[in-house]
Length: 243
Length: 243
DNA sequence: CGTTATTTTGATCGTCATCAATGCATGTGG
DNA sequence: CCACATGCATTGATGACGATCAAAATAACG
Image 1 (cartoon, each protein chain N blue to C red):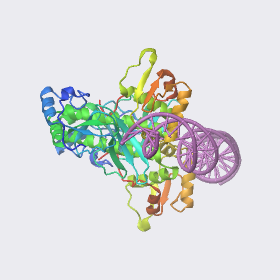
Image 2: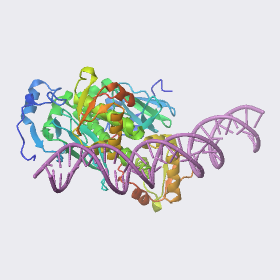
Image 3: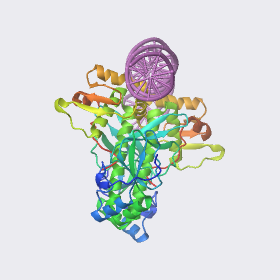
Image 4: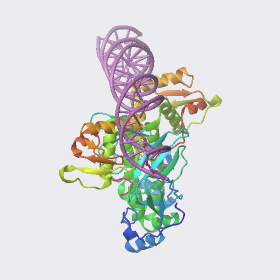
Protein backbone atom coordinates (compact mmCIF):
# COMPACT_ATOMS: atom_id res chain seq x y z
CA UNK A 1 0.00 0.00 0.00
CA UNK A 2 2.55 2.54 1.06
CA UNK A 3 5.57 0.46 1.88
CA UNK A 4 8.19 1.61 -0.49
CA UNK A 5 8.74 5.23 -1.48
CA UNK A 6 8.12 6.20 -5.06
CA UNK A 7 10.44 8.51 -6.88
CA UNK A 8 8.60 11.67 -7.83
CA UNK A 9 10.29 14.54 -9.60
CA UNK A 10 9.24 17.72 -7.84
CA UNK A 11 9.06 19.57 -11.11
CA UNK A 12 6.32 17.21 -12.23
CA UNK A 13 4.48 17.55 -8.92
CA UNK A 14 0.87 18.63 -9.41
CA UNK A 15 1.37 21.00 -6.51
CA UNK A 16 4.68 22.55 -7.40
CA UNK A 17 6.00 24.80 -6.00
CA UNK A 18 4.19 24.22 -2.74
CA UNK A 19 4.38 26.28 0.44
CA UNK A 20 7.30 24.24 1.67
CA UNK A 21 9.74 24.70 -1.16
CA UNK A 22 8.66 28.12 -2.34
CA UNK A 23 10.50 30.10 0.36
CA UNK A 24 13.75 28.23 -0.20
CA UNK A 25 16.60 29.49 -2.36
CA UNK A 26 17.29 27.25 -5.40
CA UNK A 27 20.22 25.29 -3.94
CA UNK A 28 18.27 24.38 -0.81
CA UNK A 29 15.36 23.43 -3.00
CA UNK A 30 17.49 20.99 -4.91
CA UNK A 31 18.65 19.49 -1.64
CA UNK A 32 15.08 19.15 -0.48
CA UNK A 33 13.98 17.49 -3.68
CA UNK A 34 16.67 14.91 -3.28
CA UNK A 35 15.42 13.99 0.19
CA UNK A 36 11.76 13.77 -0.66
CA UNK A 37 10.02 10.43 -0.54
CA UNK A 38 6.66 10.01 -2.19
CA UNK A 39 4.12 7.39 -1.18
CA UNK A 40 0.89 6.15 -2.69
CA UNK A 41 -2.13 5.20 -0.62
CA UNK A 42 -5.41 3.64 -1.71
CA UNK A 43 -8.81 5.08 -0.74
CA UNK A 44 -9.66 4.88 2.99
CA UNK A 45 -6.14 3.94 4.00
CA UNK A 46 -4.82 5.69 7.08
CA UNK A 47 -1.78 7.76 6.27
CA UNK A 48 1.00 7.32 8.79
CA UNK A 49 2.70 10.56 9.76
CA UNK A 50 6.14 10.13 11.22
CA UNK A 51 6.65 12.36 14.24
CA UNK A 52 8.27 15.62 13.19
CA UNK A 53 8.06 14.96 9.48
CA UNK A 54 6.30 17.28 7.10
CA UNK A 55 3.88 15.68 4.68
CA UNK A 56 2.56 17.39 1.63
CA UNK A 57 -0.33 16.10 -0.38
CA UNK A 58 0.75 15.88 -4.00
CA UNK A 59 -2.39 14.38 -5.46
CA UNK A 60 -5.86 13.24 -4.40
CA UNK A 61 -8.04 14.09 -1.42
CA UNK A 62 -7.32 13.47 2.25
CA UNK A 63 -9.31 14.07 5.41
CA UNK A 64 -8.13 14.74 8.94
CA UNK A 65 -10.41 13.40 11.64
CA UNK A 66 -10.77 13.20 15.39
CA UNK A 67 -12.86 10.52 16.93
CA UNK A 68 -14.13 9.14 20.20
CA UNK A 69 -14.37 5.57 21.38
CA UNK A 70 -18.12 5.58 20.92
CA UNK A 71 -17.59 6.09 17.18
CA UNK A 72 -18.59 9.72 17.12
CA UNK A 73 -16.35 11.41 14.60
CA UNK A 74 -15.45 14.93 13.55
CA UNK A 75 -13.76 15.58 10.23
CA UNK A 76 -11.49 18.50 11.05
CA UNK A 77 -10.41 19.28 7.50
CA UNK A 78 -10.21 18.11 3.94
CA UNK A 79 -6.78 18.41 2.36
CA UNK A 80 -6.16 19.25 -1.27
CA UNK A 81 -3.03 18.97 -3.40
CA UNK A 82 -0.37 21.33 -2.11
CA UNK A 83 -1.65 21.27 1.48
CA UNK A 84 0.31 20.13 4.47
CA UNK A 85 -1.50 17.10 5.79
CA UNK A 86 -1.29 17.81 9.47
CA UNK A 87 0.22 20.39 11.77
CA UNK A 88 -0.53 18.72 15.07
CA UNK A 89 2.61 17.03 16.15
CA UNK A 90 1.85 15.10 19.28
CA UNK A 91 -1.22 13.00 19.76
CA UNK A 92 -1.17 13.88 23.45
CA UNK A 93 -4.79 14.82 23.17
CA UNK A 94 -7.45 12.41 24.20
CA UNK A 95 -9.43 12.06 21.00
CA UNK A 96 -7.86 9.95 18.32
CA UNK A 97 -6.33 11.91 15.45
CA UNK A 98 -6.14 10.24 12.06
CA UNK A 99 -5.29 11.21 8.53
CA UNK A 100 -7.18 9.20 5.95
CA UNK A 101 -7.09 8.99 2.17
CA UNK A 102 -10.48 9.70 0.61
CA UNK A 103 -9.36 8.95 -2.94
CA UNK A 104 -6.15 7.31 -4.09
CA UNK A 105 -3.44 9.75 -3.08
CA UNK A 106 0.22 10.63 -3.39
CA UNK A 107 1.94 12.09 -0.36
CA UNK A 108 5.42 13.64 -0.23
CA UNK A 109 7.26 13.17 3.01
CA UNK A 110 10.09 15.38 4.20
CA UNK A 111 11.90 13.55 6.97
CA UNK A 112 12.09 15.30 10.32
CA UNK A 113 15.89 15.70 10.35
CA UNK A 114 15.72 17.54 7.06
CA UNK A 115 13.03 19.82 8.41
CA UNK A 116 14.95 20.71 11.56
CA UNK A 117 18.06 21.31 9.53
CA UNK A 118 16.36 23.48 6.92
CA UNK A 119 14.68 25.44 9.68
CA UNK A 120 17.98 26.22 11.33
CA UNK A 121 19.66 27.28 8.13
CA UNK A 122 16.83 29.19 6.49
CA UNK A 123 14.70 31.36 8.75
CA UNK A 124 12.32 32.02 5.85
CA UNK A 125 11.49 28.34 5.83
CA UNK A 126 10.33 28.33 9.46
CA UNK A 127 8.60 31.64 8.92
CA UNK A 128 6.64 30.19 6.03
CA UNK A 129 5.65 27.19 8.13
CA UNK A 130 4.60 29.53 10.89
CA UNK A 131 2.51 31.54 8.50
CA UNK A 132 0.85 28.37 7.27
CA UNK A 133 0.07 27.39 10.85
CA UNK A 134 -1.45 30.80 11.54
CA UNK A 135 -3.68 30.54 8.50
CA UNK A 136 -4.82 27.17 9.69
CA UNK A 137 -5.61 28.59 13.12
CA UNK A 138 -7.54 31.42 11.60
CA UNK A 139 -9.52 29.06 9.45
CA UNK A 140 -10.24 26.73 12.36
CA UNK A 141 -11.71 29.70 14.20
CA UNK A 142 -14.18 30.13 11.37
CA UNK A 143 -14.93 26.43 11.44
CA UNK A 144 -15.82 26.79 15.10
CA UNK A 145 -18.19 29.59 14.21
CA UNK A 146 -19.75 27.38 11.56
CA UNK A 147 -20.23 24.38 13.83
CA UNK A 148 -21.26 26.41 16.85
CA UNK A 149 -23.61 28.93 15.34
CA UNK A 150 -24.89 28.00 11.91
CA UNK A 151 -27.93 26.15 10.62
CA UNK A 152 -27.73 23.04 8.49
CA UNK A 153 -28.57 25.06 5.36
CA UNK A 154 -25.82 27.54 6.06
CA UNK A 155 -23.27 24.83 6.72
CA UNK A 156 -24.04 23.05 3.48
CA UNK A 157 -23.88 26.28 1.51
CA UNK A 158 -20.51 27.09 3.04
CA UNK A 159 -19.30 23.58 2.32
CA UNK A 160 -20.26 23.75 -1.34
CA UNK A 161 -18.62 27.13 -1.78
CA UNK A 162 -15.51 25.91 0.00
CA UNK A 163 -15.24 22.91 -2.30
CA UNK A 164 -15.83 25.14 -5.28
CA UNK A 165 -13.13 27.51 -4.14
CA UNK A 166 -10.63 24.77 -3.42
CA UNK A 167 -11.29 23.02 -6.69
CA UNK A 168 -9.53 25.92 -8.30
CA UNK A 169 -12.01 25.89 -11.15
CA UNK A 170 -13.04 29.17 -12.71
CA UNK A 171 -16.74 29.80 -13.17
CA UNK A 172 -17.79 28.58 -16.57
CA UNK A 173 -19.79 30.61 -19.10
CA UNK A 174 -23.14 31.51 -17.58
CA UNK A 175 -21.52 31.06 -14.19
CA UNK A 176 -21.99 27.29 -14.21
CA UNK A 177 -19.42 25.01 -12.57
CA UNK A 178 -19.32 21.32 -11.88
CA UNK A 179 -17.69 20.56 -8.54
CA UNK A 180 -16.20 17.19 -7.87
CA UNK A 181 -17.11 15.81 -4.41
CA UNK A 182 -15.09 12.64 -3.92
CA UNK A 183 -16.07 12.24 -0.26
CA UNK A 184 -19.29 10.43 0.64
CA UNK A 185 -22.28 11.85 2.55
CA UNK A 186 -21.01 10.52 5.83
CA UNK A 187 -17.72 12.37 5.46
CA UNK A 188 -19.60 15.55 4.63
CA UNK A 189 -21.88 15.05 7.63
CA UNK A 190 -18.97 14.51 9.98
CA UNK A 191 -17.24 17.56 8.54
CA UNK A 192 -20.26 19.74 9.24
CA UNK A 193 -21.44 18.25 12.52
CA UNK A 194 -24.67 16.95 10.93
CA UNK A 195 -25.91 13.49 10.07
CA UNK A 196 -26.13 11.85 6.68
CA UNK A 197 -29.87 12.29 6.30
CA UNK A 198 -29.74 15.99 7.02
CA UNK A 199 -26.96 16.45 4.49
CA UNK A 200 -28.93 14.57 1.87
CA UNK A 201 -32.16 16.42 2.61
CA UNK A 202 -30.48 19.81 2.53
CA UNK A 203 -28.78 19.07 -0.76
CA UNK A 204 -32.13 17.96 -2.14
CA UNK A 205 -33.71 21.17 -0.95
CA UNK A 206 -31.00 23.19 -2.69
CA UNK A 207 -31.74 21.17 -5.80
CA UNK A 208 -35.45 21.93 -5.54
CA UNK A 209 -34.58 25.59 -5.00
CA UNK A 210 -32.60 25.48 -8.22
CA UNK A 211 -29.28 26.32 -6.58
CA UNK A 212 -27.57 23.14 -7.63
CA UNK A 213 -27.98 20.00 -9.68
CA UNK A 214 -26.87 16.56 -8.54
CA UNK A 215 -26.26 14.56 -11.71
CA UNK A 216 -24.65 11.73 -9.74
CA UNK A 217 -23.25 11.26 -6.25
CA UNK A 218 -19.74 12.65 -6.21
CA UNK A 219 -20.63 15.66 -8.26
CA UNK A 220 -22.58 18.87 -7.80
CA UNK A 221 -23.28 21.43 -10.47
CA UNK A 222 -23.60 24.99 -9.30
CA UNK A 223 -25.66 26.91 -11.79
CA UNK A 224 -24.80 30.31 -10.36
CA UNK A 225 -22.84 30.89 -7.20
CA UNK A 226 -24.57 34.14 -6.21
CA UNK A 227 -27.72 32.60 -4.68
CA UNK A 228 -25.58 30.04 -2.88
CA UNK A 229 -23.48 32.81 -1.38
CA UNK A 230 -26.67 34.46 -0.24
CA UNK A 231 -27.27 31.36 1.88
CA UNK A 232 -23.80 31.51 3.44
CA UNK A 233 -23.14 34.02 6.21
CA UNK A 234 -19.41 33.65 5.60
CA UNK A 235 -17.66 34.92 2.58
CA UNK A 236 -15.75 31.80 1.71
CA UNK A 237 -12.21 32.64 0.88
CA UNK A 238 -10.01 29.89 -0.15
CA UNK A 239 -7.07 27.70 0.49
CA UNK A 240 -5.91 26.55 3.86
CA UNK A 241 -3.12 24.28 4.93
CA UNK A 242 -0.64 26.03 2.74
CA UNK A 243 0.34 29.59 2.03
CA UNK B 1 -7.40 52.74 29.10
CA UNK B 2 -4.42 51.35 27.27
CA UNK B 3 -2.73 54.39 25.90
CA UNK B 4 0.62 54.50 27.54
CA UNK B 5 2.75 51.45 28.25
CA UNK B 6 3.39 50.48 31.83
CA UNK B 7 6.78 49.35 32.95
CA UNK B 8 6.62 45.77 34.13
CA UNK B 9 9.65 43.87 35.31
CA UNK B 10 9.56 40.44 33.69
CA UNK B 11 10.86 38.84 36.83
CA UNK B 12 7.75 39.99 38.66
CA UNK B 13 5.49 38.82 35.83
CA UNK B 14 2.79 36.44 37.06
CA UNK B 15 3.50 34.32 34.02
CA UNK B 16 7.28 34.22 34.07
CA UNK B 17 8.98 32.58 32.30
CA UNK B 18 6.41 32.28 29.57
CA UNK B 19 6.69 30.30 26.36
CA UNK B 20 8.20 33.25 24.56
CA UNK B 21 11.19 33.94 26.74
CA UNK B 22 11.87 30.42 27.99
CA UNK B 23 13.63 29.17 24.85
CA UNK B 24 15.93 32.21 24.72
CA UNK B 25 19.47 32.26 26.09
CA UNK B 26 19.91 34.74 28.99
CA UNK B 27 21.42 37.62 26.99
CA UNK B 28 18.59 37.54 24.46
CA UNK B 29 16.14 37.37 27.30
CA UNK B 30 17.51 40.56 28.78
CA UNK B 31 17.21 42.23 25.41
CA UNK B 32 13.64 41.09 25.10
CA UNK B 33 12.73 42.32 28.55
CA UNK B 34 14.03 45.75 27.69
CA UNK B 35 11.76 45.95 24.65
CA UNK B 36 8.60 44.75 26.30
CA UNK B 37 5.70 47.12 26.75
CA UNK B 38 2.92 46.24 29.15
CA UNK B 39 -0.60 47.62 28.89
CA UNK B 40 -3.60 47.57 31.16
CA UNK B 41 -7.15 47.16 29.87
CA UNK B 42 -10.43 47.36 31.75
CA UNK B 43 -13.11 44.65 31.51
CA UNK B 44 -14.81 44.32 28.11
CA UNK B 45 -12.28 46.51 26.35
CA UNK B 46 -11.14 45.27 22.97
CA UNK B 47 -7.42 44.62 22.98
CA UNK B 48 -5.69 46.00 19.91
CA UNK B 49 -3.12 43.64 18.41
CA UNK B 50 -0.56 45.32 16.25
CA UNK B 51 0.10 43.38 13.06
CA UNK B 52 3.03 41.04 13.57
CA UNK B 53 3.44 41.74 17.25
CA UNK B 54 3.33 39.01 19.85
CA UNK B 55 1.10 39.65 22.83
CA UNK B 56 1.31 37.68 26.03
CA UNK B 57 -1.32 37.84 28.70
CA UNK B 58 0.38 38.63 31.99
CA UNK B 59 -2.66 38.85 34.20
CA UNK B 60 -6.45 38.49 34.02
CA UNK B 61 -8.74 36.70 31.58
CA UNK B 62 -9.18 37.38 27.87
CA UNK B 63 -11.44 35.89 25.22
CA UNK B 64 -10.93 35.56 21.48
CA UNK B 65 -14.13 35.77 19.46
CA UNK B 66 -15.39 35.63 15.90
CA UNK B 67 -18.66 37.19 15.02
CA UNK B 68 -21.12 37.77 12.20
CA UNK B 69 -22.97 40.91 11.26
CA UNK B 70 -26.21 39.46 12.59
CA UNK B 71 -24.68 39.38 16.09
CA UNK B 72 -24.10 35.67 16.20
CA UNK B 73 -20.88 35.12 18.04
CA UNK B 74 -18.44 32.29 18.68
CA UNK B 75 -15.92 32.51 21.49
CA UNK B 76 -12.94 30.68 20.04
CA UNK B 77 -10.85 30.57 23.21
CA UNK B 78 -10.32 31.90 26.67
CA UNK B 79 -6.79 33.05 27.41
CA UNK B 80 -5.07 32.69 30.76
CA UNK B 81 -1.88 34.27 32.12
CA UNK B 82 1.11 33.09 30.13
CA UNK B 83 -0.90 32.49 26.95
CA UNK B 84 -0.28 34.16 23.64
CA UNK B 85 -3.39 36.16 22.92
CA UNK B 86 -3.76 35.42 19.27
CA UNK B 87 -1.92 33.54 16.55
CA UNK B 88 -4.01 34.62 13.61
CA UNK B 89 -2.14 37.35 11.92
CA UNK B 90 -4.27 38.67 9.12
CA UNK B 91 -7.95 39.38 9.43
CA UNK B 92 -8.42 38.40 5.81
CA UNK B 93 -11.20 36.14 6.91
CA UNK B 94 -14.77 37.25 6.60
CA UNK B 95 -15.94 36.95 10.20
CA UNK B 96 -14.76 39.62 12.56
CA UNK B 97 -11.95 38.57 14.88
CA UNK B 98 -11.67 40.35 18.21
CA UNK B 99 -9.71 39.96 21.41
CA UNK B 100 -11.59 41.18 24.44
CA UNK B 101 -10.73 41.59 28.11
CA UNK B 102 -13.09 39.68 30.37
CA UNK B 103 -11.60 40.98 33.60
CA UNK B 104 -9.11 43.81 34.08
CA UNK B 105 -5.98 42.57 32.33
CA UNK B 106 -2.29 43.24 31.77
CA UNK B 107 -0.89 42.42 28.35
CA UNK B 108 2.78 42.36 27.36
CA UNK B 109 3.51 43.35 23.81
CA UNK B 110 6.63 42.37 21.89
CA UNK B 111 6.90 44.64 18.87
CA UNK B 112 6.98 42.96 15.50
CA UNK B 113 10.52 44.07 14.57
CA UNK B 114 11.85 42.47 17.72
CA UNK B 115 10.04 39.24 16.91
CA UNK B 116 11.37 39.05 13.39
CA UNK B 117 14.85 39.80 14.61
CA UNK B 118 14.79 37.26 17.43
CA UNK B 119 13.41 34.67 15.04
CA UNK B 120 16.29 35.17 12.65
CA UNK B 121 18.94 34.99 15.33
CA UNK B 122 17.53 32.19 17.47
CA UNK B 123 15.96 29.26 15.67
CA UNK B 124 14.75 27.86 19.02
CA UNK B 125 12.57 30.91 19.39
CA UNK B 126 10.73 30.32 16.13
CA UNK B 127 10.60 26.62 16.87
CA UNK B 128 8.94 27.32 20.21
CA UNK B 129 6.40 29.61 18.53
CA UNK B 130 5.76 26.91 15.97
CA UNK B 131 5.24 24.34 18.67
CA UNK B 132 2.79 26.66 20.40
CA UNK B 133 0.90 27.09 17.15
CA UNK B 134 0.73 23.32 16.65
CA UNK B 135 -0.65 22.82 20.13
CA UNK B 136 -3.26 25.42 19.40
CA UNK B 137 -4.21 23.64 16.18
CA UNK B 138 -4.46 20.34 17.97
CA UNK B 139 -6.66 21.85 20.64
CA UNK B 140 -8.88 23.56 18.07
CA UNK B 141 -9.45 20.17 16.48
CA UNK B 142 -10.83 18.92 19.78
CA UNK B 143 -12.97 22.02 20.07
CA UNK B 144 -14.45 21.18 16.67
CA UNK B 145 -15.27 17.71 17.96
CA UNK B 146 -16.91 19.27 21.00
CA UNK B 147 -19.04 21.72 19.04
CA UNK B 148 -19.85 19.32 16.25
CA UNK B 149 -20.59 16.13 18.14
CA UNK B 150 -21.32 16.66 21.81
CA UNK B 151 -24.45 17.21 23.85
CA UNK B 152 -25.02 20.24 26.04
CA UNK B 153 -24.23 18.22 29.15
CA UNK B 154 -20.98 16.98 27.75
CA UNK B 155 -19.93 20.45 26.64
CA UNK B 156 -20.57 21.93 30.05
CA UNK B 157 -18.70 19.13 31.79
CA UNK B 158 -15.74 19.64 29.49
CA UNK B 159 -15.88 23.37 30.07
CA UNK B 160 -15.81 23.02 33.84
CA UNK B 161 -12.91 20.58 33.73
CA UNK B 162 -11.05 22.84 31.36
CA UNK B 163 -11.46 25.82 33.67
CA UNK B 164 -10.40 23.68 36.59
CA UNK B 165 -7.34 22.50 34.74
CA UNK B 166 -6.35 25.97 33.60
CA UNK B 167 -6.88 27.50 37.02
CA UNK B 168 -3.80 25.58 38.04
CA UNK B 169 -5.36 24.78 41.38
CA UNK B 170 -4.63 21.46 42.98
CA UNK B 171 -7.57 19.45 44.26
CA UNK B 172 -8.23 20.34 47.88
CA UNK B 173 -8.60 17.81 50.67
CA UNK B 174 -11.54 15.56 49.95
CA UNK B 175 -11.09 16.46 46.26
CA UNK B 176 -13.00 19.72 46.56
CA UNK B 177 -11.98 22.75 44.51
CA UNK B 178 -13.51 26.14 44.01
CA UNK B 179 -13.13 27.33 40.41
CA UNK B 180 -13.31 30.98 39.57
CA UNK B 181 -15.46 31.70 36.48
CA UNK B 182 -15.02 35.38 35.70
CA UNK B 183 -16.89 35.18 32.40
CA UNK B 184 -20.67 35.53 32.34
CA UNK B 185 -23.18 32.97 31.09
CA UNK B 186 -23.35 34.52 27.66
CA UNK B 187 -19.60 34.12 27.19
CA UNK B 188 -19.84 30.51 28.29
CA UNK B 189 -22.76 29.93 25.92
CA UNK B 190 -20.90 31.45 22.99
CA UNK B 191 -17.84 29.41 23.84
CA UNK B 192 -19.83 26.18 23.74
CA UNK B 193 -22.23 26.92 20.90
CA UNK B 194 -25.25 26.91 23.23
CA UNK B 195 -27.54 29.62 24.51
CA UNK B 196 -27.60 31.22 27.93
CA UNK B 197 -30.65 29.36 29.16
CA UNK B 198 -29.25 25.98 28.26
CA UNK B 199 -26.01 26.78 30.06
CA UNK B 200 -27.91 27.85 33.14
CA UNK B 201 -30.22 24.86 33.07
CA UNK B 202 -27.37 22.41 32.63
CA UNK B 203 -25.38 23.92 35.47
CA UNK B 204 -28.48 23.68 37.64
CA UNK B 205 -28.89 20.06 36.69
CA UNK B 206 -25.29 19.34 37.66
CA UNK B 207 -26.02 21.06 40.94
CA UNK B 208 -29.07 18.88 41.52
CA UNK B 209 -26.99 15.85 40.64
CA UNK B 210 -24.53 16.90 43.31
CA UNK B 211 -21.63 17.35 40.89
CA UNK B 212 -21.11 21.01 41.67
CA UNK B 213 -22.26 23.81 43.91
CA UNK B 214 -22.88 27.38 42.71
CA UNK B 215 -22.41 29.59 45.76
CA UNK B 216 -22.52 32.76 43.69
CA UNK B 217 -22.26 33.67 40.02
CA UNK B 218 -18.62 33.69 39.01
CA UNK B 219 -17.74 30.65 41.05
CA UNK B 220 -18.32 26.92 40.90
CA UNK B 221 -17.32 24.42 43.52
CA UNK B 222 -16.47 20.96 42.28
CA UNK B 223 -16.98 18.49 45.08
CA UNK B 224 -15.19 15.67 43.32
CA UNK B 225 -13.94 15.73 39.78
CA UNK B 226 -14.43 12.03 39.05
CA UNK B 227 -18.19 12.10 38.37
CA UNK B 228 -17.70 15.21 36.25
CA UNK B 229 -15.09 13.44 34.17
CA UNK B 230 -17.55 10.60 33.73
CA UNK B 231 -19.79 13.11 31.95
CA UNK B 232 -17.01 14.27 29.63
CA UNK B 233 -16.07 12.09 26.66
CA UNK B 234 -12.75 13.94 26.43
CA UNK B 235 -9.99 13.61 28.93
CA UNK B 236 -9.34 17.28 29.45
CA UNK B 237 -5.66 17.97 29.36
CA UNK B 238 -4.54 21.39 30.04
CA UNK B 239 -2.93 24.52 28.82
CA UNK B 240 -3.13 25.88 25.35
CA UNK B 241 -1.77 29.00 23.77
CA UNK B 242 1.65 28.42 25.27
CA UNK B 243 4.03 25.55 25.63
C1' DC C 1 -28.28 -9.82 -13.02
C1' DG C 2 -28.22 -10.39 -8.26
C1' DT C 3 -25.83 -8.51 -4.29
C1' DT C 4 -24.26 -4.84 -1.49
C1' DA C 5 -23.30 -0.14 -0.37
C1' DT C 6 -24.80 4.42 -0.60
C1' DT C 7 -28.21 7.84 -1.08
C1' DT C 8 -32.72 9.57 -0.77
C1' DT C 9 -37.22 10.07 1.27
C1' DG C 10 -40.65 9.54 4.96
C1' DA C 11 -42.52 9.42 9.91
C1' DT C 12 -41.64 10.38 14.52
C1' DC C 13 -39.18 11.95 18.55
C1' DG C 14 -36.02 14.58 21.55
C1' DT C 15 -32.90 18.21 22.52
C1' DC C 16 -32.04 22.58 22.54
C1' DA C 17 -33.69 27.39 21.07
C1' DT C 18 -37.01 30.78 21.71
C1' DC C 19 -40.18 33.55 24.20
C1' DA C 20 -41.62 35.18 28.64
C1' DA C 21 -41.49 35.87 33.48
C1' DT C 22 -39.42 35.68 37.91
C1' DG C 23 -35.56 35.76 41.10
C1' DC C 24 -31.43 37.67 42.79
C1' DA C 25 -27.56 40.43 42.99
C1' DT C 26 -25.16 45.12 42.75
C1' DG C 27 -25.43 50.02 42.65
C1' DT C 28 -27.49 54.89 43.14
C1' DG C 29 -30.04 58.60 44.90
C1' DG C 30 -33.49 59.95 48.17
C1' DC D 1 -30.88 52.46 55.25
C1' DC D 2 -34.38 51.72 52.08
C1' DA D 3 -36.80 52.27 47.49
C1' DC D 4 -35.85 51.71 43.01
C1' DA D 5 -33.33 50.76 38.86
C1' DT D 6 -30.40 47.84 36.17
C1' DG D 7 -28.05 43.85 34.75
C1' DC D 8 -27.54 39.00 35.02
C1' DA D 9 -29.10 34.33 36.27
C1' DT D 10 -32.65 31.04 36.82
C1' DT D 11 -36.93 28.73 35.79
C1' DG D 12 -41.00 27.68 32.99
C1' DA D 13 -43.88 26.89 28.63
C1' DT D 14 -43.72 26.06 23.90
C1' DG D 15 -41.90 25.15 19.41
C1' DA D 16 -38.53 24.13 15.64
C1' DC D 17 -34.76 22.01 13.77
C1' DG D 18 -32.24 18.27 13.25
C1' DA D 19 -31.60 13.28 15.02
C1' DT D 20 -33.28 8.80 14.93
C1' DC D 21 -35.68 4.96 13.11
C1' DA D 22 -37.35 2.68 9.02
C1' DA D 23 -37.93 1.85 4.19
C1' DA D 24 -37.45 2.64 -0.67
C1' DA D 25 -34.61 4.12 -4.58
C1' DT D 26 -30.37 4.43 -6.89
C1' DA D 27 -25.62 3.42 -7.78
C1' DA D 28 -21.65 0.36 -7.67
C1' DC D 29 -19.74 -4.22 -8.33
C1' DG D 30 -18.79 -8.84 -9.17
